[in-house]
Every structure is written in structure tokens, then in C-alpha cells.
Image (cartoon, rainbow, N blue to C red; front, side):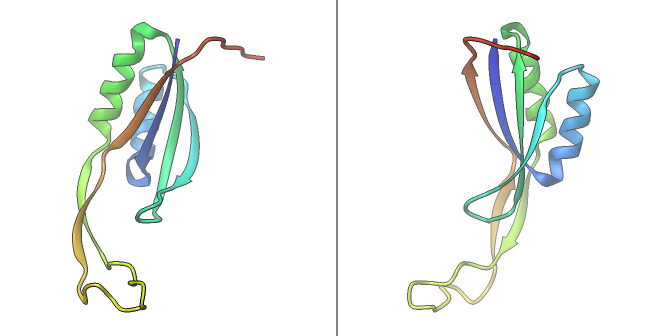
Length: 107
């Protein structure tokens, strides 16, 4: 059995939750925030049998889309802007960790 931790952008969270329900995969959904952009993310925790891990990964990959976004660079050390204009960055997609579960209990 594996534990899958999938961190996705909030824009993809509802679509991912619906896809997991459709596939009859139970997940715990947690609101989280990213460190770099300080934007909202959602973390899904999925405990799943080993033979269904690839199915879950495929669903996450299909649903989690990368997109372009503009951001204003943070203030420099002296309080000066590194650049006066927003820069385009790529956000979205998913960050996924898998871990082996030694024991699993449901009460």
C-alpha cells in the first residue's frame, strides 16, 4: 500500500477531486499555501493499493495543468524592486510524493 501526497494549484483542485471520486478513489483534501508565490494550493492525501498507484498518478497528471502567470518580483534586500515590471512565470502542474505504508487502520 502507498500514500500519495499530491500538491496542486487551487484552480485544479475541484477538477481533481471530481476525477478521483469518479474513479472511486478516496482522498483527503487539505488547504495549503506555496512558499515561493504564497498562493493557495491544495494537497491531496491518497492511501491506495500498489496496483492502483499508476492509475492515481495518471489522473493527477491529466488534471493538473501548467499555465503562464505574471508576478511582480519581491522587494530586494534594500527595499528596491529588482525589476519595475511583472515577469511571466510557469505555475500549476502537480508535485507528487509517494511513500510506502507499513500499517493502515480505519476506525
